[in-house]
Amino acid sequence: MMAPHSEVENEENIVRLPAPEKPRMSESPPRLIIIGAGSRGNAYARALGEATNGICAAVVEPIAYKRQALGRAYIWGDDGQPADGQEFEDWQDFVAWEEARRAKQAAGKEVPEGVDGAFICVQDELHKSVILGLEKLNIHIMCEKPLATNLSDCIDIYKSLLPLDSSKAPGRLFSVGHVLRYSPHNMLLRKLLLEDKVIGDILSVNHTEPVGWWHFAHSYVRGNWRKESTSAPSLLTKSCHDIDVLLWLLSSPPPNSSLPRHLPSNVSSLGARQFFSKHRKPAAAKSATNCLSCPHEPDCMFSAKKIYVGNDLRGLGSGNTGWPVKIVVPDIEDYLATSGRTAGEEAILKELAADYDANTPADEISKKNWFGRCVWESDNDVCDDQVVTMTWDNDDNASAGDGRGPKIAQFHMVSFTAKI
Picture 1 (cartoon, one colour):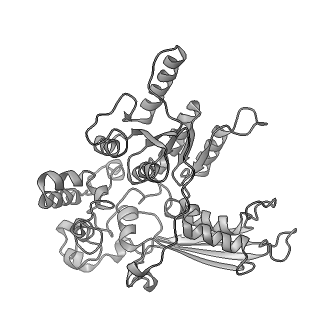
Picture 2 (cartoon, helix red, strand yellow):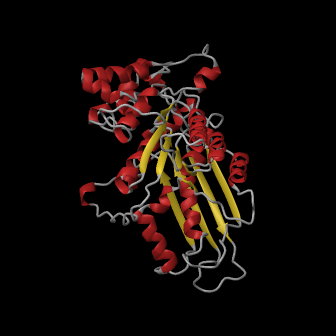
Picture 3 (cartoon, one colour):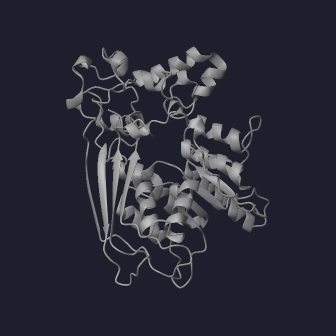
């Protein structure tokens, strides 16, 4: 059963908080390169134009269609062509181009403008190599969350960003995309809790991340983040921003405070892959491993055909051509524009029909997504249900009302919800 809290009868009646004021426009707009033209890369490129006067100057993306689609939308326009330095297949190509550009500029030659910063929106396990590769360019960096998939990589990244002279502050900006800190709701919540003290000291917090049953099936059973060995634990890939916002609310002092952070004294966690495993496979599915050949498909809520082609969720039948449909067929809009709805459905179904068997090499299975695979026959191994408990001891310097007394926070990442 899906969690009941997830249902909203009429979203049109929801009163939404106003967005924060736009930042003051820069007299010298920064030029940014997008490294990774997936959903996040496109989101940042769009935000550059809608919320700032920053310039989306270039894109790095190995998949030609994605690279060109972002470029047409945000860089060279629908009718234009990429100029020198506006598109690259690989981030290393960009680094080589930028180093050559700087050498020519130093020699007094006329060159295109460079970039001031980069949005890193590649797969999580690639973050370290890209950040370290860009280090020599000394540009500003915004890296998508999570920063890396293990502690060792995080430490290497941190060391690479330190100034050579430890007495000097870093001369460039580096940030991680924990965007929950910047939502109007959370910004107001933090002000009410830490500055206005509307409820006094916080003693206990319960926070739930409702992943959503079909979102979890898409991303963490069939998609990029289904295996720890090729990505990271689901708590890190899905919910590091939840842990971050809890620490932001409960550990970070209010603005203009000289107090240090009040960090948890104990952190514990329990989780498991409880639902998406073979022992729960319906008997009616028999030996099928793919939705398109499964006798149980018409009655299965996890049917890939329903999720990506159907009308009820965000399938093509609902009129949606964005996520998650575009993840299955990146050029779905071109199919619809040139050949119509039927051709679009056929393109999706062709991708969903892809499957593997016992003779398929393990590395071939792990290196791609299998969006038509039975959710009980996938190679997923990440937790679909996990709880984190954090406790704080009393700060020796605590005083009444400063929020530095004992408290507890419980976080629950759960995949079995209707709400996303």
